[in-house]
Length: 320
Image: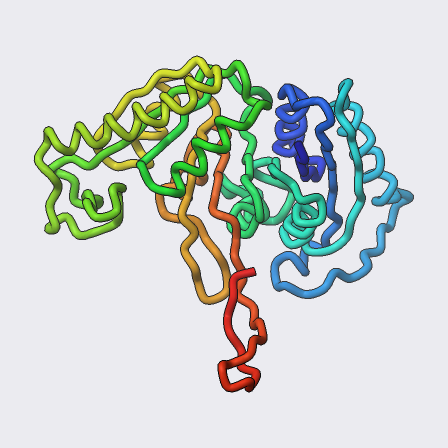
């Protein structure tokens, strides 16, 4: 497995490093540990980094090298190939670029860093990496995994999360609680969209299915996902809840004693970014547990020339 771990010397990145060290990565796994030096002003206004004069005798590069050395020793184990890289640039962009270069199957980051927005529950770098990453992202808030809550809703994005967990041998042996959340007749925010067989943001006036049908659908979604994981050797149980999806997921992590939430997310295309759906973002921002977001791969549209029937060259759009 190919894993990218980004650290910056903060307590949060130390938690992420300890989490990576604690997981049973398959033999032959490549763990690339990186640290990115970035000018704070550039991080805020998007300007290129500029040299910073240090009045004392500290060598910032040497400090980063020491940080990387300690992290590499922490995550090292038999059967693992550990790489370290000291890099410069805009932190979130460099992390995403390194993930693509490594062909990473997972990115691990801390929830908060050393930047000027450190008071946010989820740091700006972590949030941007989750938005733009080409692979699943684990935002660490605990230094080990003691129980997994897999949130499912029957969508293709949710199925991606099930498939990732089914194949993720680094979580082998973990207790997995599968949970599906449906709306209630009193819900004024979310309702069921029968044509998509999942939960969608629609006006409450659109109504919900009869309670029995509602429950049967939610139970079927949870039971199907649990069956998929049980076939892979996981100790798995399933349950359902009704109400606000993000709220119920976060309550369940406490009630079921899970400190890792795994969920899929649809990508919502903005004018200049790809961002998460509202449920995944709310859980990511407000959960006290670590959160693993599994998304559809980012697809970029590029112009690809082809010949028209007349022999004239025209341009067609194709997904990269």
